[in-house]
Image (spheres, rainbow, N blue to C red):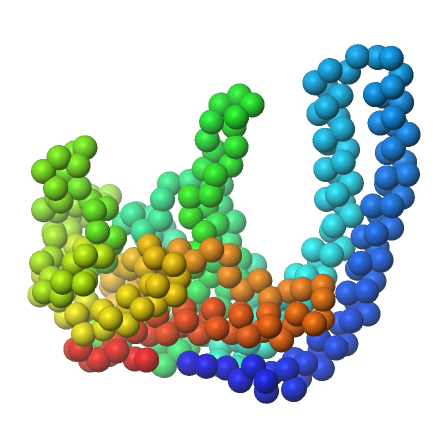
Length: 318
């Protein structure tokens, strides 16, 4: 589950990136011109407004921020478009190296709704999705994309958007047939009212009851809890033998990352990972490092998905 970064940079991708240098230079020039000429126009307007003797008060402050913010955003647009084009080119080449496909724009499907229903994702007021990687890995249909969920908090002047989740959603066919629904969740997620009396014996999701499943691996129990409507099948699906690998990948994504839903022969993984796959850069000297970083990020995600998507009891696909 590794890509040849040197081979990519010495091959078609490296040549394609070299050909984009004029595009990057043109984007920088266009951005500078927008900032420069907009500043020339805006400066006398703001100077007159602030020093004409009129009292603008808070409206003047707001007007200043709106004008400066608008100029900054308008000027940055060519750079943003150039970085997006570079990112798509790099990530598409990485995807081909893994034998799958890449798209920048995403329309989430039923896997997102299931992740929300079973509490893998928090409630939110605004969402954005990007960076879809899809195809077949190790004989399993594979679909991964990023989600950014935000919640509106505060009131009045203190109202602001707060990120409640940023990370990856992975949807795969599982390596064995099963008919139950099993939830792998963070420890302490489902506790009795106000946390009194400890963990619940069962949890209900949109009318679907899942019972707590006792586990035998002490490290596993310190981090995760398992809930299912079939105790026997849950222990087959989530076997302790791959826990060490799972926890190692957890550390790679800085802690509270992985949770999963096994349902109707498929597995949905949610990984809190920050903003990944941002391989676009305006500096060609950064290209190889960006390619390596995006490759490592996707490779780690894919290994995680395959590790939890075992074909045989006690053996993970690594």
